[in-house]
Image 1: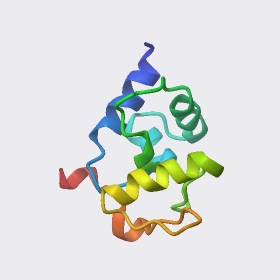
Image 2: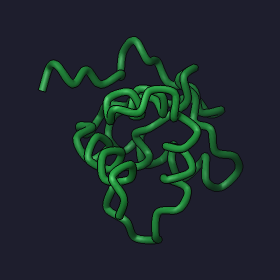
Image 3: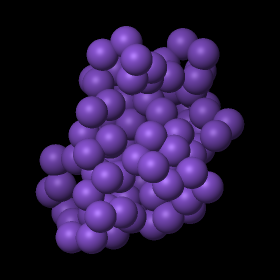
Length: 103
C-alpha cells in the first residue's frame, strides 16, 4: 500500500462512531490538501467487507455523494450510529462534523 492510501485510511479509521467528515478534510488531515477526489476514488475501491468506516465521509456540502442503493446503504449505516440523515442524504456538518482536536 502506498503512502497516500496509508495516510488516508489512517485518518478515516479515526473518525468516531456518530461523526462524519468530508473528503476534503480527510485529504487535508492526511497531508494531501486538494486531493478530495482521490480520497473518494480510494474509498470506491475498498474491497467488499472492509471494516474501514468509509460511510462516515461525505461531500463538502454535507451530502452523501452516492446514488441509489449505495446512498441507501450509507444512509442506513449512519442512521444506525445516530447521525441524522435526510432521505436525500443531507447531514448537518455543524452538528455531526468530527473535530479531531477533541479526541
